[in-house]
Image 1: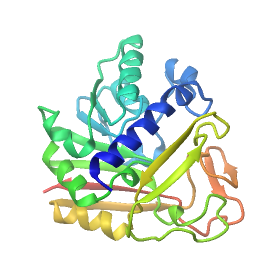
Image 2: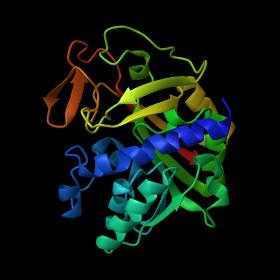
Image 3: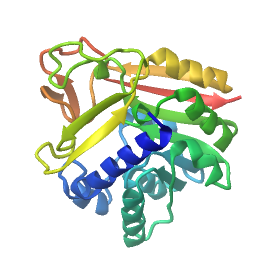
Image 4: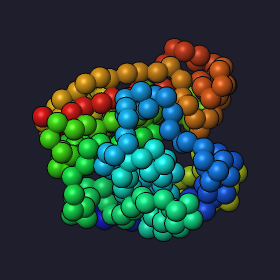
Length: 265
């Protein structure tokens, strides 16, 4: 598949999700507008104090985490492929009188749209699977980080993406062998939403991610795995503790999320 094809397909898909997501209980815009933080302990434990730091949020959607960084005292910039998401992010940012900045571009092209270096690059939950390769992504991270500064990321574990939607069988390859082209209806934030779209994604094994960081001069500080998700975005889940979700019939037997921090050498 040509690069422009997957970019255009996925851009249209995410544009169609924006209003549904903003109106959903899942994103709790009412809570966010009244001051609720959208960051979890998984990523906060690695971020540290961001006050006064320049934070770049890659694949920011409509910017809730980006604006949370702004509320925490960071100089925050969010980047996303979806022009509709960026448009809505700017509207919300203005409404809240925050100073976050939002840029619409393909992540691989981000260095050409940014005129500064950052103290922290952040990305989280359902991001890198939309990219065909991670070496190019890690090169982008290196190019936009200041020396001796870090990337912090949290995402769903690649083991999760091996299963079918109901976690009954191993359906997809753990390794990045080819693009996964699917037609979907609804969305994780509203499974009954009347939207249909095609998606193009890739599975990335842990080795691909770590080697991409290593070969692009990003030194791993830590890599953590968690047997739960902080989001109820899969089928067959149970909430075994507040805001901690597992696949009911799998319990704590599989990793569901990982987090990492790596420093530019």
